Amino acid sequence: MSTDTVRQLRVRRAAAVRLEGGDPWRRPEPAHLTAAQLSAWSAAANWIAADGVTPIIPREVLRLLWQRGGPDRQLAERIATNGGGR
Image 1 (spheres, rainbow, N blue to C red):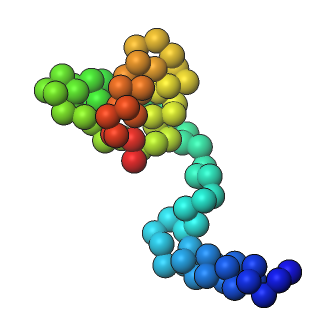
Image 2: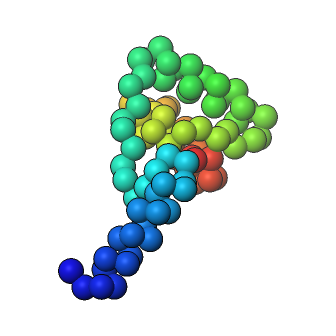
């Protein structure tokens, strides 16, 4: 490896230690939520959105809602478009 590559890897490793959650480029573990929990997220997000406010929900939950399809997919797309997925 070149010296520059080694330096970049060391900088990245040091940043991963400082950051909460570690390396931001790593894919997080998939959320393990039951159907009832996903339904609760959906209901809560719809309730917040009904007041004209964009709900902020974890990205993993947003992905799972999108995968469910139907109204949950539409909700997930609306939240993602408005910047509510963190």
